[in-house]
Image (tube, rainbow, N blue to C red; front, side, top):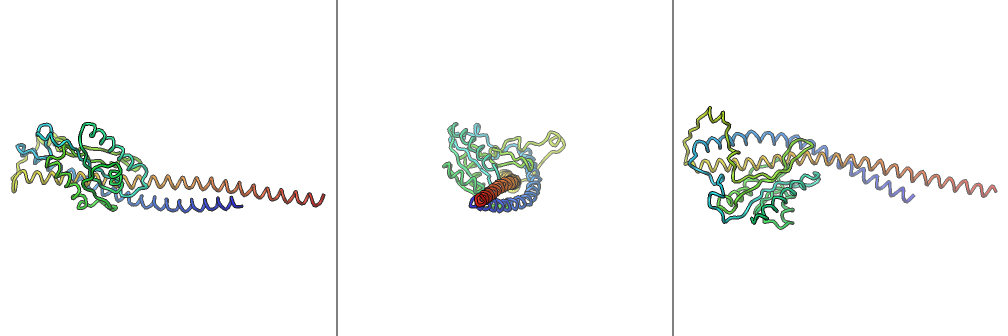
Length: 299
């Protein structure tokens, strides 16, 4: 029964794997709820700071922040470089989450390189960092080991490197790449233009413009206040992207581990069927040998 022993060993191995994937599924389900709560809690701040930035821009139209400069009109034609902030997970076992967003990043990078632009990247997450290093991309900063909750202080440093390069005219544009949480079963990879800030991002509604008139006293001056506020706004966009990505990660991991658990159960059933058939065949063979031996002795 050497074959039967080998099959029993495989069944035991798959059962142990099933226990692990089931435990990971339950952990991911618990973390998913918390990640979704953090993601939704961050949205009001992003909306409010966007409104304040819109009011300030409306009240002081004579100053144009470098974050909103039009490259074609500003004379910055020598940079010919584009930045990418790539948000991925630190860990794997979350289905095709990272693969999908990195595929979208690769396609956008090819498009940018075809236009004759150099590429600089910021990696947020181990998976993205490893991928960018493998393809030989220029990584100017990175943030990894973020844990289960995004922490703004860990993101500000790497993001500031990219913002400073844009303000200095070394970059023509910056793209933010992450996975947006739609629902538990669906997550959408996005490559969004982060800089220069499009006027539509800060646009107020017509009703709000008509209802309110905004007048501010700036201290120390308008450029300092507006630039600092827009910096906070951009950081809030990156934080929101990381929060969305973490919610997507836990959802994708829960779904992937549930599929793995179900597949393990199916495989165990198939192995048990094979084991029973093999065992039955062995017993039938032994009985046949006994009957044959008894018949030979009696004859």
